[in-house]
Amino acid sequence: INTFLHAWLQQRQLALGALTRGQKRALVIALEHDGAFRGRSAASYVAKVLSMGRATVFNYLKHAREAGAA
Image (tube, rainbow, N blue to C red; front, side, top):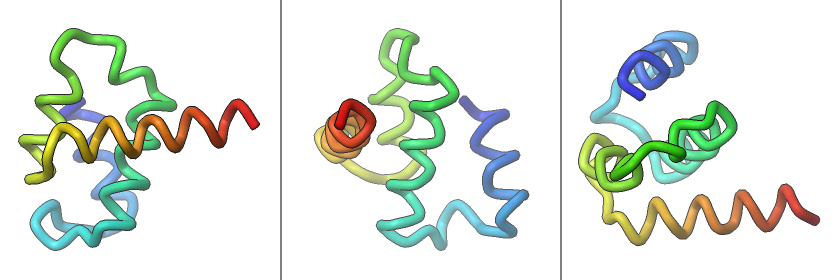
């Protein structure tokens, strides 16, 4: 997760502490596409790193999965 996260930020020339809500959502979706949430406690870890609630991470994942199924 850390390697992907840092590469994602570097590609976009962004700082972790300056991410907007939309950028955090895009990062969570990108992590999902990369398979990061298959691991145990991944959502909790991502929530902590992005300074957001676990419920928010799950909400982003739910919407991304619903959009992918549509």
